[in-house]
Image 1: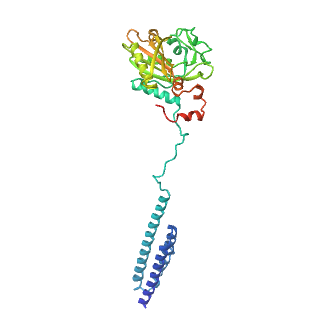
Image 2: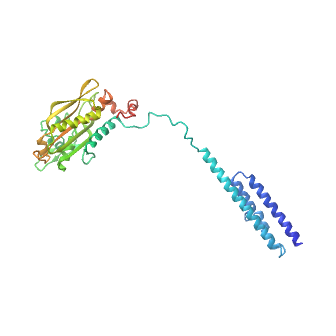
Image 3: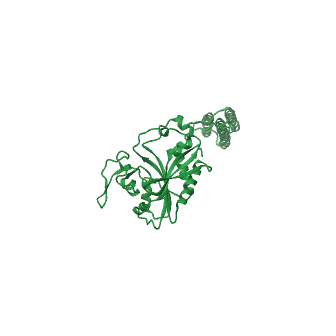
Length: 357
């Protein structure tokens, strides 16, 4: 009778295992396998229920039936674990296949509306790079290159007397705030700088030569806006101070710079001129696309400018040069109207999505 009871229970257990195996093999999802696990191995599962009946069996049958149930549970657990692993792997493979990137497919077509450097910015960067390669130091930033200046740095220190036309209210933007008063009682009003030469004065006051600097920046003048004039534009100025610098050094530096900007075969012409802060002074032309074009001004720093900055002109000499970025960009790109740079017309700017350099 004990043997019959054990055999009957074993058959019941074998049938459960076979059923569980068949259903696990047909299950398509991990969730389906989990439901099978709960049905057979959960707290109220079918194999668990058989285990709870051990107390009703004869004492000598209990070890045999208990061992059979434990073996069955272990077999079903192994089948479930194997099925879950296989289904998770299949699911991951399906996701990878769906996200697969075919690197042999053609790339996206070029889009002209991708961002790119503004033509004025690229011109400034090119000019700065030329002088950095010559060992010049970039002087930039609000602390050393302020756009709101006072008359001293913008005019007085640059050898521009009080009656100079540039200091007239009709030519310069003055700031409506109290002037700076010196110990001698002189007043210097605030202005929007008319050139970046003021940066040179500040640098000379705070640094002892020798040095060579380049100072790009935005400047402001009370000009009526037309095709060639704007009330604000961009300038780049250089200053090189040292011992035994000559006009030949200035001409060589300017010529090298213009060759880098316009091409090594560019023709350069120097003409005598006048600037209050340089002596001698020159204006420089290039022969570009069939005609002579004025592109910059330069000269040897006037000894009085050096003295005002606290530098002994008998010990140090130097040269300075300055040019308008808009002018260079207009010449290089053959742009007839300066206003095109500022209106942000996409039809105009899209032409410059590749550098000319």
